[in-house]
Structures are given as structure tokens and as C-alpha cells.
Image (cartoon, rainbow, N blue to C red; front, top):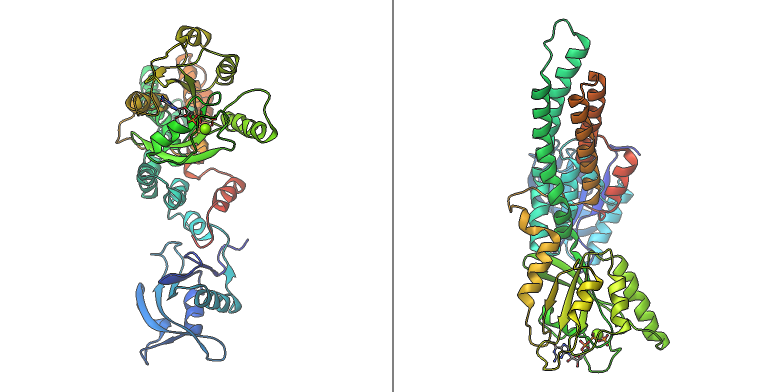
Length: 461
Ligand SMILES: Nc1nc2c(ncn2[C@@H]2O[C@H](COP(=O)(O)OP(=O)(O)OP(=O)(O)O)[C@@H](O)[C@H]2O)c(=O)[nH]1
Ligand SMILES: [Mg+2]
């Protein structure tokens, strides 16, 4: 793909609106703009206007036919989003004006941009790093304010900055080691303790990143929380209680919920993608059985399972099946309907069967009791308590994987130093560390992976 051809796209959603924006980027952007723009001011020449100015005029097609009255903004490289010349045309909103102007721009030689191509150019030109580019996408997609805050932090380069500092320090260490390797006579060797201390200093910060990584992902995507239990234990009542509205049908008939229902709820600042499922039981009709299959699928993809039991019922074989299903997952056990006088459930049996691995909380979904305790248990699961609100959080699985590699390589370097292995070994570990850090910022990632990241963007961004 040629990097510097002229690209264009609609920057706003297609539909009726106050304005629509067509965006162009590339060395010929202003020339193309000038060829279709008739300024309102008679003696204005678009090719000569100051950078970052907005100009009123008309977009006219090849026959001089006016397509729209617009504002056209000229932004000259390098102070632009892509670091190339950029032209933005503010048309009247609505499907047709925007489409006709875009068609004209394409007819005049611009190419329709790929998804994320503007931001990709910003990355390839070095204006932003990969975490900043991801921040752009995350901000567009954020569905809760904490996620949006994190995206802003990333967008402005805070995450990148911390990683760059780590990389610079590593470079310093490597320079020392390589000098010692190349000129053993002239360079004083750094004592082992001093070197270990330097590595420890790096490791400390890497640990902080790792601690926050899963929380960062939760803020970005929401914690997928699946409500499971046998029929009629009050799963849908709990969903409605947490949502504060009657979203799911609740009846006293077992098997009310047939399909999965997913809703976004923020509890104590943690966004949850909460999923109500069909009550799990054996031998039922086809529709319900399909619902139960889906419940199991959801359970498999969950970050957290909330298993619900009814205190007014004995522990049944169905309940035991639920306990089997949550094994090996992050789980919370809820004993529901504690407002009822009849309380026959054998809590000890549940606790023993799960070896006390899950917190057990008594609630009444109907009356809203136990909400606070449930919120605390959720905070505990995501480890939000241990993270300071100032920390820069990594937000993606790929960041986490690279950071784990960083830790692994630094640990290995530390043992090499402690074991007084030849300097070459230490150098190799540190170069690997350096390159793993670069994966996060995009400096050492393959073209292929970068492609996949940007293909997730929308066209025009
Ligand atoms: N007393 C009392 N009744 C409750 C409570 N929670 C739910 N119920 C009642 O239990 C019955 C079943 O509630 P649902 O929320 O439909 O149960 P479910 O687990 O979603 O059931 P299925 O969708 O059939 O699997 C309804 O009659 C609710 O009013 C509670 O905390 N206390
Ligand atoms: Mg239900």
C-alpha cells in the first residue's frame, strides 16, 4: 500500500444531522479541495490561505453545478492529525449532500480510506504511538465514564510516556553492559549489587502495570458477569434490582427466562456486562433447552459468575450442577430470598462442596437487601481496592501479554546477574525486554499485527 496517496472518508455517521464532515489527507489534499471549492469571497485562493483557517464557499461538480454550501478547513502539514496536509469539508448534514461531495472527491482522484487509516497515518508518521491510537478507538467506543477517562489518559500519551521511560532506562543499562563487553580493559565493571538494584527498580514498575492490567481491561470492556442458578431462584429479579427497572420478566413459574439478556450496569465504579440466563435444569422442552445451552456458553466466556440459590428450597441436584459449573471460575455465591421465613437451605453443604473458594452472601433481590455486600465482593474480584486512582492502567490483553513477557525477561536477567553469568546472557534478556516494551507502544510490532489493530477502527477515523 502506498502511504502517501490521497485518502478521503466521511468523518461523521451517515444520516440526518446538523453537519457532516468529509475528511481528506495527503500531499494533494489542498489541490483537490481547491479544484471543487468556489469561495464566497471573490479573490480568495484556497492554495494561498493560511493553515488552519476555515473558509466559506460552495462545492461544485465538474459542470459547475453546486452540490452544497460548506465550510472548508485547510490544515497544512505537519501540524495535523496525520502530519500530512488535511482538508475538512463541513457539509450540511443529511445523507445526500455528504454522499455527493464524497463521491465527487473520489471521482477527482482521492481513494476511500480504510478503517482507521487516518489514525494509522498518525501512528506511522510518529505523531502518536500505538497506545495513543488505541486510546482514540477506546474513547469512541467507551461505554462508561471510567473507561472514557482511561482512554483520555492513553490518548494523551500518559501510558506511552511511562513505557518510554522504562525503555530509556533499559537502553542506559544495555549501553553500560555492552561497553563493558566491548572494552573490558577500559570500562570499570558495575558491581553485581548495583545492577540488581537497577533491575529491581524496573521490575517494581512492571509489577504495578501488571496489577492494573486486568482492571484496565474491565474498565474498557466491562466485566462480563453471568447470573446462573436453577429456575425460579430469582436471577431476573436480581438483574432488575441492580438495573433499577423491570427489564426481565419475573414470574413464579420456573423457566420464565428463555434467552439471555445482557445489560450494562456500573456498580461501585466497575462497569459490568451483566447477563441473565435461563434457569439450568434437566429434561425440559426444546426452547428452554436451547436457552440452557446458551446459558452454558455465556458462562464459559464470563469473567465472573454469580451463582444464585434460593434459601427457601433444599439444596437440589440442580443446585449441585450449578456448583460444578462454576468450578475454576471467578465466582460469588448468593443465597437469595432471605426475606422469607422459610429458610431450609444447607449453607454448609454449599460451602464444603466449593471448599470455601467463593464468598457467600445473603440477599433479597426482591427487597434490595445485600446490595452493598455484593458490590464489595465484586470490587474484591477485580482487585480495584489495591489500585490507586492515579495509576496508569494498561487496557488490552495484548498489553498485558507483552508486559508479562517484560517481567519474565527481567526476572531472567536478574538471575543471570545474580548467578554471575557472562554479560552476553544479560544483554540478550535486556534486549528482549526492550523489544517486548516496544510491542506495547508499537515500535517493535509486526506490520501484520498493526494492520489488525487498525482494522478494528471505523472508516473516517
Ligand atoms: N420473597 C422473595 N421472592 C423472590 C425474591 N427474588 C425472587 N423472588 C420471586 O421468585 C420468583 C422467581 O423469580 P425470577 O426472578 O423470575 O427467577 P429466575 O431465577 O429468573 O427464574 P427463571 O427465569 O425461571 O430461571 C418470582 O415470583 C419472584 O418474585 C426474593 O428475594 N424474595
Ligand atoms: Mg429469569
